[in-house]
Amino acid sequence: MPKLSIDDATRLAARALTRAGASSAAARATAQALVAAETEGLGGHGLSRVALYAQHLREGRADGSARPKVVKKKGGTCLIDAGGGLAIPAAALAAKEAVKRAKRYGVAFVGVVNSHHFGAAAYHLAPVAEAGLAGLAFTNSPAAINAWGGRKPLYGTNPVAAIFPRRGAAPVVVDLSLTEVVRGKIMLYAKEGKPIPEGWALDKDGNSTTDAQAALTGSLTAVGGMKGTMLALIVELLCVALTGAAFAYENDSYFEPGGKPRIGHAIVAIDPEALAGAESYYARLEEFITRMLADDGVRLPGARRQLATAQARADGVELSDGIYKELKALARAKA
Image 1: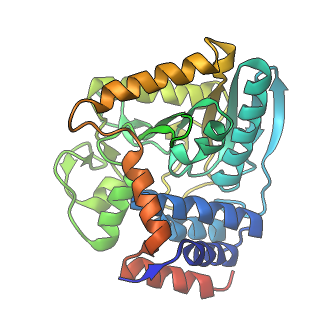
Image 2: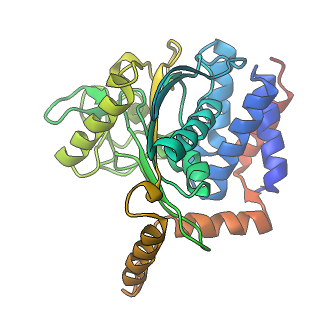
Image 3: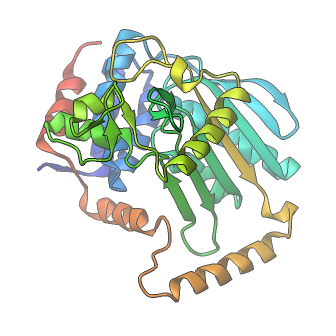
């Protein structure tokens, strides 16, 4: 399998997105996010997504020239309109606004509307932690999870991410989808023509399936059963009811012909200084981490991803032959 440096992988992905109609700034930012996911071992949110994004750009389902902007603001809150463009630039603006407002008001909530696929949620929180703030990120997505007791998808996969900065060490990072497996992983199985494990998904008729393609147009199993569906409901309301974005069931599947996504995101930033104080926060956090790691077999959340990224920086990013060929073809294609 081919192996590229992070810079080369980013240039290749950015070229593919530019060819499909993205502005150079949007293409570069999006490529960086996808490569970051790839380095962390999150292939479902990595370079396998370039072809889908390029398709959406060519079909007009994503506006490659859109520039996100703040359309409403009040105190520690603001609303950003992504303008139907790719999500990464809008999420970057949301993080910037969240940091600025949390520094002033102690806490900030920034919503995003009219957006696209959010990618790996924790990626957008890195600037929050770099500013010494704790952060949360949420997004909805096209319908993927049935309401408890129902047979039709109602909620998105609705990932949740959190970040807690540390002094002199990488932050604690939690990033999870509210399904047994992310849809991007099923997409990889579909690309490779492999069956998925039992229990991951249901087909469009509500029956359990091991067919990856049927799962992409069906629904996914919520993590933790009823509790997972309740968490998905919470994220749906945070990202949509508060922001005016489209609910999961109002968004067409990314994997079938449809209209422009109107996905909603939310980023929350909290300044420790506004509560017990930064010194107390860092001391209490380290005390808890020490207790966690004193138990053999416990791994700090985010540690494996951070190690994988360090390895990729040294050795490069390994891609499957299929994805590498796909990226090269897209980078040569005419818009």
